[in-house]
Each structure stands twice: as C-alpha cells, then as structure tokens.
Amino acid sequence: MNSIELHNILPYVFEGRDVQSEIWLQDVVFQKGETYLVEASSGTGKSSLCSYIIGYRKDYLGNICFDGNDIRQHKVSDWINIRKHSLSLLFQELRLFPELTAMENIDIKNGLTNHKSRKEIETWFERLGIADKMNAKVGRMSFGQQQRVAMIRALVQPFDFLMADEPISHLDDENGAIMASIMMEEVKRQGAGVIITSIGKHMQLPYAKTFRL
Image (cartoon, rainbow, N blue to C red; front, top):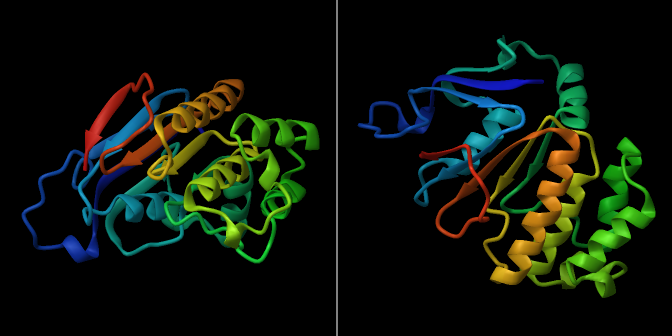
C-alpha cells in the first residue's frame, strides 16, 4: 500500500454542522514513507478517524481509498490481509488483554505474523524500561507502562502505515522520546508511513505535514 486517500469524509454525527477542519470534508492523501501529525481537540473525532481507516467503523460520509480502491468494497478476507501486512494501529484505549502478561499480549500478535524474534522483543522491553514487567499481568501495570507494551505489539508485524492514537499521553518526556526512537527505527526499516494523532502532547518528529482536525 502506497497511499491512503480521504475524500470528503465526515462522521455521521457531524452531519449538518458547520465543520472547520483540514481533514473532514477535504481531499487528503497520506503517502507511504512520510510522517504526519493530526492535531485535534477532544471530541472532534480523531479516534473515529483511525477506526475508519482501519475498517472497524463505517459510520461516515465520503470515501476512503487505499491506492485508489474504495475500502467499502473490501471483504473480510481483504481486511485480514491488510491488518496483518499493511496497517498497524496503536489504539488510544490500547485494547490489551489485562488478564494476560505483557509478553503474552505481544506473543498473540507475533505468533500470527512471526515478524520479530524473542531477542528483538526483549530488547525493546529493556530500552523502554519495562524489562521487569514482561511476565507481569497487564491489568496490574500503570497506563504508561501499558502504552509501551501496546507500542511493542504494534511493531511486531509488517506494515506500510503505522497509526498511533495519542501514543505518549501518559509518558514523561524521556520515555516518550525512547518510544519515538524505537518506533521510527522500525518505520524507517520498513519504509512505512506514520499517522499520529494528538490532543496536545505529541512525539517530536520531523512531520511532513500537520493537519488540524
């Protein structure tokens, strides 16, 4: 996948409103290999945008296309392939399994993709300062620790685009910088594009463009 194209999309819930946005009701193209920031106020639909692109929700007007192909035409089998090989998303709410350990959460996804070695994953845990949490249940970890686990999970697959919805909202500057460094190392290795959303605090990266949602 080389491009994600948004054509006049708008959440149904915003229909009829006077919307001032650089995303909604606009023609926007995200290119593979570029890094983008989507800044938003709370309640303006940034998490909805991520859900639309990943295909989890369809409650919007307009069209979203991957390389010119409308995603509304994709079948379940198409989405399985896309989410396994082309798109990865770090959810704002993380969606980890609290009853499983941090490593078990990673292993579920890496078991499907066989993308990273155990050593590579353990190195990420060490760099992120949570090596001692690998065998701890996620439900007993802080939200900031869980954010780091969720980032590792997002990286254990091939992707053309990585989306991260408020990835460092609960991290201090030092840990946020480490996460950004690890993320961009993997992004560059894969030649991927990045779409990051933020309602304030965001990763300090060389963004090709910043959009105001």
